[in-house]
Length: 531
Image (cartoon, rainbow, N blue to C red; front, side):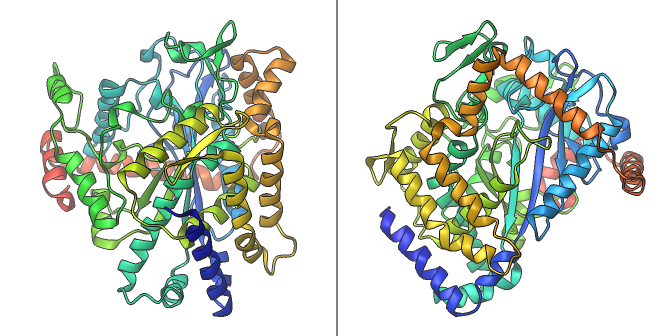
């Protein structure tokens, strides 16, 4: 893929949007967050208690749920027009969560868990006795059988983003397309996703915050790593071990041929994976005694089992499969899943990172985005893993257009291309935020020792602390921060009302089930609309 065309087409489209008076619509996109964090006991071990009742039902609460584990909380914001609104809401959820958290528990301040000596100490999330709740639990049991629990206990931050609806007709005119609008929108969201796959290595480079892990997490698989201290291993130039093949990436899915050529190829290839038997999982079977341990024995149980840095998304209706929602109503937004929990922020998220990401995703949308070839696919996977494990290495080379290029030059070239987008996003504001956020990242490219991943290692050396002790100390500082800033009574009452409503909704689901669980699962996969 010729890099020059990528940048020139983006610049041309920015110019045309500006001359057409449409550039301002880029400022009103929707953004939201999903932030995961482990509940830990004060000794740093993973909490064995159930999801706090005072938080509400993990099955039905709109903003506070669990991911894989009963101890892996997930805080979800609505979609907002402004980044500061997203961060304000996330802050309020944390305030409420801490107010209702048992006194002997903390929220872990890192993506990578500690003190994981035994997978059984990572409790699988439960969602009650309804068929919907049981399906969520069995899916997670299946993940345990297929991949183990450690990878599932890793926390991350997902950034959800969409362009405003009134942007698309004008953008279609600017590009000269004659496609039906929905088809045009779907195609360009997939163009965004392809470009993110090409360039997404920039995210762990700039924001990766997990260069070191507890030795217990590696379970003896330490040959590739250096020993940092008596209970930590690391790689000297790593940015995000979470995003390496010891963390978020899943070798079991390396052979999955999921297509990003467009919505129909994507849905078709994902649906095939969900419907295709896999011998290893067939041997496991559906049951261990009386306990159901998988939803099915296919390559993927459901869509969410496919691990990807970026997903096209559409809000689903009750009982509706995500692939069906996409096929019937198209792409609504994209979910970017490459952010580590930022240890230095009490909420795990930094505003300037989100501002940069917004501009970056807009660039990915506007830039030329041809289909991904097999050769390019290999290069992208090489770049992702290389940056995760060696991103700060001096003179590091990545693969672009089949050739090796210096990471530093490519990164600087990419960030410079974001300048006009940041200027558009800042236009009309009382004070610029996007351009300073971009310039901050440009400065960090010149001083990689100040990148978050380098700061973590330097802090551990300067303090002579283990990763475990350092992260536990940060968790204590974040707890103190939130306990000193309680929610005002009206907002606290609002969250308590949401919790009570969610429990009532779960009870109603459980009371209204009319079919047995196996029939429910069979109907879900046979006819998604009937489940």
